[in-house]
Image (cartoon, rainbow, N blue to C red; front, side, top):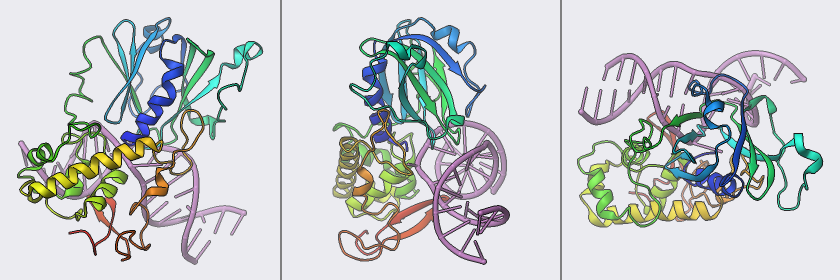
Length: 295
DNA sequence: AGAATTACCTGGCAGC
DNA sequence: TGCTGCCAGGTAATTC
């Protein structure tokens, strides 16, 4: 699921239930995901109020009243879902504002937040992750900006801060391909394989082209920066992309996958020129593009 | 130092 | 129907 638009969609889905909620208990169903869970995690968070849900790049940030933050990354297959707390089922007025998605595979429900929600009564927020590439890290008050996972992240492609000139200065003298440069989280933070392919197609630029070359051409740099911002903004509005049946926290599906111009469309006609969309491998990962109308 | 490759996991799907 | 091999949106560690 999770590039920036998917993580932002998760954040918006969890926000009404989590913000202002008190952590009654945190249950860890295994000792680790990609990394070991922080020591004494339940003891550190129990009884605390969640002040806000934030996001940086593909990281979800859960901020607590004592200033600590939980840094949550969804890896390749992580998802959150919300359920009524079954221990209080008799008190629960269920179903009035949500439908609760069933777990597709309860064996991969690794973390359960038992919450006393500000507006929704008792709730469980459950983290499920079959491949376990995701992780949870705890960060003390004031340490967020310097945290190893966050400190080297580049500019957010949301809003209007990623201008053509900013992109040009980031890509200047880079000999790597545009594909690799756009995936580099130290330059622009939050893009993944899907949205890089889509943004390059929209700008009419070949993923094989050197990043530094585009940096020297203000019009191309402007076009690429605009395409990146547009693709990300449109994907957020669409609720992200739902691949392999991934769902949002409230169980609904994003629908940006229906707008893909090239991603996962190998052999199908280009929506701009009708030529056949190609798949190549760059740095070990699939790239989809139209060789006929991208230069 | 920067770039490319490999490692980490499970599930789904195509082909046999 | 079951097996095998391959592929998948991520970052981090290792190698070159």
